[in-house]
Amino acid sequence: MYRSHVLVCGGTGCTSSGSEKIIQKLEEEIKKNDLTEEVAVVKTGCHGLCALGPIMIVYPEAAFYSMVKEEDIPEIVSEHLLKGRIVTRLLYQETVTPEGIKSLHETKFYKKQHRIALRNCGIIDPENIDEYIGTHGYEALGKVLTEMTPDEVIETILKSGLRGRGGAGFPTGMKWKFASGNRGNVQKYVCCNADEGDPGAFMDRSVLEGDPHVVLEAMAIAGYAIGANQGYIYVRAEYPIAVERLKIAIRQAREYGLLGKDIFGSGFDFDIDLRLGAGAFVCGEETALMTSIEGNRGEPRPRPPFPAVKGLFESPTILNNVETYANIPQIILHGADWFASMGTEKSKGTKVFALGGKINNTGLVEIPMGTTLRTVIEEIGGGIPNGKKFKAAQTGGPSGGCIPAEHFDIPIDYDNLLSIGSMMGSGGLIVMDEDNCMVDIAKFFLEFTVDESCGKCTPCRIGTKRMYEILDKITKGEGTLEDIDKLEELCLYIKENSLCGLGQTAPNPVLSTLHYFRDEYIAHVVDKKCPAGVCKSLLSYTIDADKCRGCTLCARNCPNNAIIGRVKEVHVIDQSRCVKCGACMEKCRFGAITKK
Image (cartoon, rainbow, N blue to C red; front, side, top):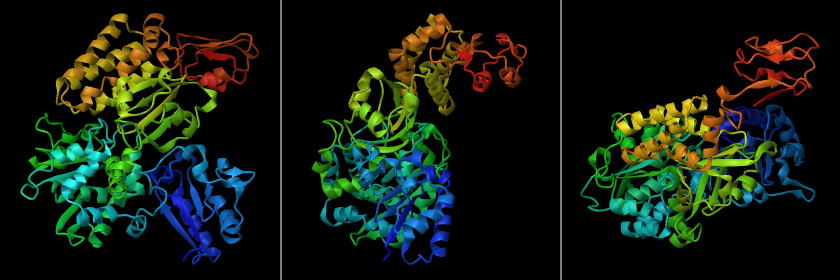
């Protein structure tokens, strides 16, 4: 028995901030102070507050140390772990109060969260199956194999109201029911979409890194429900930590008899293999993903037939994403009514979001469906940095749309987001402030879609390219009002005629920005100005004669010799030579240079 446990985040975010070196230094100092038998160091998954990494939590005091550096470790070990004195200056400051150390769950970031899919992330060692079992892991699998029929399992998932967390929100139980016929007579498959290609999305990666066994358990439950004996997890190769932990988890589950033959002595056989994706966004579409698993080029197939009838290797197949599976064991253990009691009428349970962009608390959050966007951004996210105003939030990545300030109080669920031209998507939530140009944002997502289109159908392959060209033309100040009309027409054509979800949803960022921020498009076209000061071709840098001191610092740092003026004389920018790099404005000490 250890008297203290030191939990250090081993997720991708904190690893990139140096948590591996923190762990190494921690173990060295613990050994140096003869605390090896008293203090355990546990490498966990993501705690959520990614902006504060590397993160370290010491139990039983629950002292939350943030932005820990190697040089801080000797002090933490000698003061806290050896002498029992918490190093207050290194704590996450919101937890420090005059009355003492406040629980992490009482902080603004965590207070309104409710963790189901993320319940073990940051809590257990993801590479130790015993720790997962110690948090009721594999009990749900045991329950369904010994106490429930496959139809009862499907009915429980149906009754819970769980909808797919990967994008469109199709009812999970309905999908399982469609694939459940002819159990035992037909080869079937259970697939997990762990590809997660949206820019700014890292929800599924964090679950795989912090709690991989929950996905294995859920997939086995799904296999029992539909009568499948084989599962595949399709995970992108760019997630090396997630891939390694999945390999460890699968090996451990096989060793414990929780995957393989005759699980729990029930006669049920089920195993799981990994398939690595090469980072193609289109392989997030279910038929393209299955085509890729089969060893072919990842291109979508026409539907119908749907995968529940003819999927992987032309056999009945169900596909859910990581977050969807992460909810399954808890629904089985606590019941459908428990899960359905959370959320809204048509969107039950919770949703995980990767919060990024112009936000103070960048990180991973899990909130009940129906939580307002304002609550997520102002309370959980800590608001917009530098006192800037909220302008929009992008949900659903390249497939989603922008939510403007006028909808700041909208309750987040599937139907509400669709009603305002956005979508839930997998859960990326990118926050934008007044310094973001919405035309440039639409162009960014279109550029991504053009690169990721598989090229199989003409509307997506050619149409998105033409859309991008029009947006590029507008941001360069070369657009016309007719271009805006043509852009809108193209959007509607591509939505109606593309083969798969990638093309069908590609126009969403453009349509939503046209709807809510058309004035910015018109400013680019008519006034040849970018209101946010982002689009370089429409910018001009000028020097205020009243503020210029003639120090020549701007001229000396101009890469194109575009600034004219002698020492102690007012300088002038030659607009014909200016490349609009902003170096002069950055270097000026007197605030004499402005951009318009």
